[in-house]
Image 1: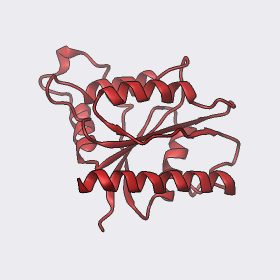
Image 2: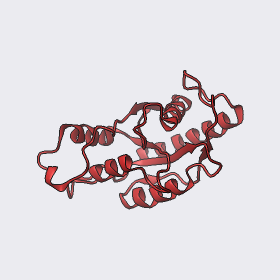
Image 3: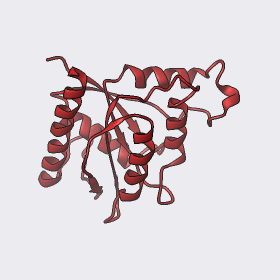
Length: 184
């Protein structure tokens, strides 16, 4: 069976984002089922209905990459106990212009990492609400990853065996979930 195209959306615009590192590690763990592509969001202008016609080039590129993806992996930090502005902006652009949303019927999985014990629990809850309302099919379950120095090496390998096994199982479950939706 052909690999599914997996769009990686990272809710951080930080150069050394630990969530980007996690997204790339997850893509590597899921490489047997997915062909992954990082979808850039930090170049999108702030959403404004006045800019919908014509769409700015970065927005058109973003919407095209989302639409070309068979499935989406959303990996995000938590900002102010909720969704980072850069990610909410991308979600808004993906839903617009009216009647031309890029989101419906895509299978998606949400996760994130931080140094705290609660990790990204609240942002994942908020993303479930917002993305579910956009018509995405969200993989059930939660994946909170407490980030520790050297958890992910420069080759995108997860160095902790128990975390690696947990994340590999998550990607395997997501591959089955996304594959069933793609076949339907």
